[in-house]
Structures are given as structure tokens and as C-alpha cells.
Amino acid sequence: MSSQPCVVSVLIKALNEERHIARAIESALAAVARVGGEVVLADSLSTDRTVQVAATYPITITQLSHADQRSCGVGPQLGLQQARGQFLYILDADMKLHPDFLPQALAFLRAHPEVAGVAGQVIEHNQSSLEFQARLERGGGHWQPGPVDRLDMGGLYRRDAIEHVGYFSDRNLHSYEELDLALRLRAKGWRLHRLAVPAIEHWGHDLPAYTLLRRRWRSAYINGVGEITRAAWRSPHWPLLRQDLRELKLYTAVLVWALMGLGLAAFLALQHHAAAALAVLAALLAAPWLAQCWRKRNLAKASYATVSLWLHVGGLLRGLMHRRRDPRSRIPNTVLQRAGDERRPSEPPPRHV
Image (cartoon, rainbow, N blue to C red; front, side, top):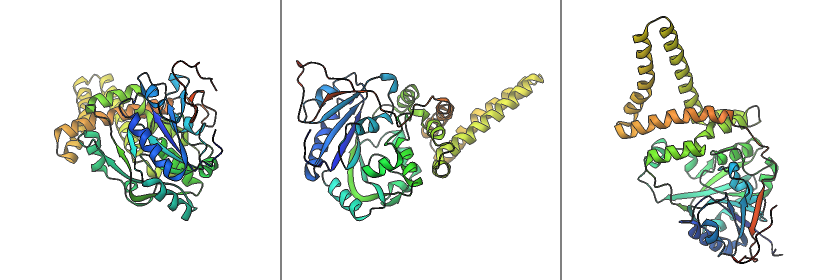
């Protein structure tokens, strides 16, 4: 291990990203070369050539030991276990880090000791998907330059701020891990900021919208609202979650609507009013779709939004019931390679830690 001080650790989280991983690593290496640092790949047991490609670069590679522990929240925490940097940057494997961002972000953090993390502007390369268009329609103040309530799509954080709140990312979360971190930091008095400078380029999912929804249901990504709600319950940041997570209010309202409708339909059926029960069920299904049609003025977008809404309501319930592991506990992993000590395919297998 190098005795030189490590200013920034760029933590790249990946699962089956062989198409993008070389670009992400090369951008991260170029970025840390300007400020002093390292690159750590946190791989969630990729089954493609992600690790083989990554192993050709002078980076540290750590890999999750158990596939059943895969989640969005496991990556940053897994990377932190091997990181040496005074500052930590989260980078997804389908992103490219802008070479000028880290110097500007470090300067801002050093000038503002009350700020725990800073992000920049995101340049999206896949703007045709219904998901991206829906995000544009929703807007969101946390994407604008200035003080923000969260750092979606990555950011640079102080290590001492992370240590102050106990852990980097919650390994139990299949999504919303950056919001969870932001809530925990803000509850401890830290602030967050987004700069008006480019930070990353992002190549998002290019799957058809409904295929992506199906994948997110299977991967439990869609459980995020329920999981973060369970994690925050009775915690110091619970009031902040209720205030900031719009989706929780929406999905809870739809869930209550659905339960009331199902209860009324069941009552009518028991009273032998089958036609009325069917009418209630039809209204239960039609009302959200009609509301989306009115809002979006587009049948395709309205239909997608309605299907997505019902799946997320189901995900809310699944997430609330998801068993939690201690987010402070060490994540079982295998160190495949350390920077400066790259392995070759013919060498013995790495040690488990």
C-alpha cells in the first residue's frame, strides 16, 4: 500500500457493467491523478467480464461474497471497507467522471466546513426513455445548483462526516441509498450542496420502459421506499423523511385508497351485490389511470405511469417487510486486487476477508 497521502477515493459500484466499466475507471483514474487518490471497484459478483476488464487497470477491486446480499446500498459501503481517502466519491459504473470536478469540489468543501458533500451537474446521454422524461416532468430542487436536500447520482463526501453518522450507505436498501445518507447527515447538522459545474456524464438504462420495470421488480429495486421507511422509523431523521420523500406520501395514499376499495367491494359481494362490487373494482383500477391521463395528456405516458405506480405500491409493502441486517456490520467480501499489486489470471486466487 502506498505511503503517499490519499486525498480522494473514487468508489465505483458495479454489477455486470462490462460495456461501461473501462470508461468509468479511466475517467476516475484521470480525475484522481489531479488531486491525489485511488480508485476502488466494489463489484456485486458480476457474471460478465466486468472484473476481468477492471483488473487491467491499477485499481483496487473488492467483490461481494454472497449474491443474496446484492443491493444498491451495498456498493458504497463495500468500497469504503477498502478505501483510504480523506474524501469519498460515489461513481456508478455507467458514469464518466468529469476531469475538472474533483478540484472544484475539494476547494468548495475546504472553504465550507459545514458541508458534508458536494455534487455537480449531470449530463444525461439517454434522454429518450419514459423514465427520464418522467423525471424531467417532476423536476426537483435537488438537481439545481445551490444548497440541496440530497445528492442523487453521486457526490464527493468528507470521510469524517461519514464516520459521524456511522456508515456510508445502508446495505439493506435496493434504492434511495443516497437519500438515506443525506437524511442521516442532515439530522446531524451537516449540509449538502450542488455546484453549477459538470460532474458526470451518465449512460442510463436503454431497456424498454416495461422491461425495466419488470427487472426492477425482480431485483427488488422497487422496494426502496418501503425499505428506507423501515430504516428511518423512530430514528432522528424520520421527520425529514416524511417531509422530503414525496413518493412515500403518494404510495401510502394509493395503498389506503386500494384497501378501502377492496374492503367496500368485499362487503358488497358478501351482501350479494356482485355488480356493484365489480363496479367498485373497476373504479379502483380506472381512477389512477384517468388521473394520469389528465396530468400527462398522453396515453402512453399515462399507462406507463399507472403501471409503475401500482408496482411501486406493491414494492412499498415488500420493502416494509424486508428483513434488515445491521448496516454497521462488515460486509463479507473478497479482495481480488490491490492498486499497485495487480494479479494475473495464472496467479493463485485472492484471499477472503
